Image 1: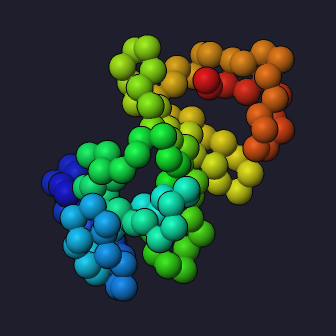
Image 2: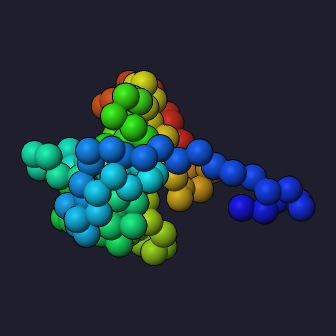
Image 3: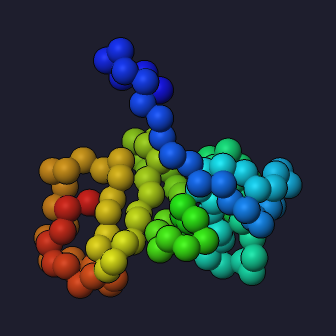
Length: 120
């Protein structure tokens, strides 16, 4: 990718021994996504982004077999049509595609027990 005239390279790990269950691609580069409900069901980024699996299932985003995975909740479209994904990392919950100004007063997160957090 180019950024301000400089070429920036992004290191992408080859997923040796991982086969995408959506397109059967083997040993691909980039993260893979493991279904949190199904046994041994992995997707490459392309198949994950095109919803090649049950959209009500959550997924683990894995950068490599040795890195700590990140749990992504099931994808769904909210009323504004924006895709919304919840990430859980180290007991913290990160919301994407959510206006920062929406605070959940009186609500406690079941994962990290934070009260009055921002997000849906």
